[in-house]
Image (cartoon, rainbow, N blue to C red):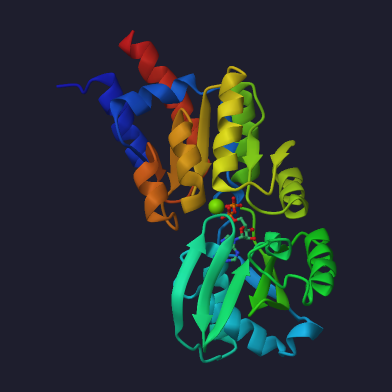
Length: 301
Ligand code: ADP
Ligand code: MG
């Protein structure tokens, strides 16, 4: 007996490495008019490494001490940047103290108590965050170092201990090998160049966008901002497919016409919220599936 076309399309997608959660989802792929990508962990490998450790004078800590504080606070986090920071501490054989009262804010960073001190590790938004009460202690120097690192395409992560800016880390990430070809194929298929929606800084985002052939870059976004952008694109008449990996992408995935999660390193929430999962992290599957969905439809008709 032959399989119904949609079912066979789903089975086919599975063989290509895309887990499609329902027949409706399979059908919706062919209606997509615009693809929006998250950056970190989606267009990039999501295994960034710590390339720079810059202690700041106000903190009076050396490189290893800055890294040790940051890594201790980040240890419970599943964010790719957190894992990179923990890995860098491990590479330097640093002993990490236990963190307490850990909490994380998607798109921003983490807070924890380490050896009785409140450690915050996160985006340069920490420089202006009113919650970091004495944000002026060392923040001038921090601003300069952040600007310098971002200008060279790094993702800057700020380390604050008891309201003093003790250091800045520069993280470097690698483009996925099939990102550029995928963007080109999607542009040809949908007739629209994909959009980049990222929580990262504008410098790093623009640099990466140029490498992959994306011109529409929306950077510095919090999870709720990603939703706003998806809705605006829909209001402009687009049926949006959003590809992401993080907790920070889940709300936008839910708002999009289709949400696709990166399977390998994707957060549990992203996997749950998504309509389909790219099992082996190959972006090139996306244009294939959109094409496949269109064919299945023509057969059904
Ligand atoms: P993207 O949208 O590119 O996947 P995220 O929204 O996950 O990026 O993160 C946006 C920014 O928030 C990061 O570039 C970083 O500055 C900061 N950030 C988020 N989580 C963490 C964390 N656990 N540790 C340090 N910084 C973080
Ligand atoms: Mg991400």
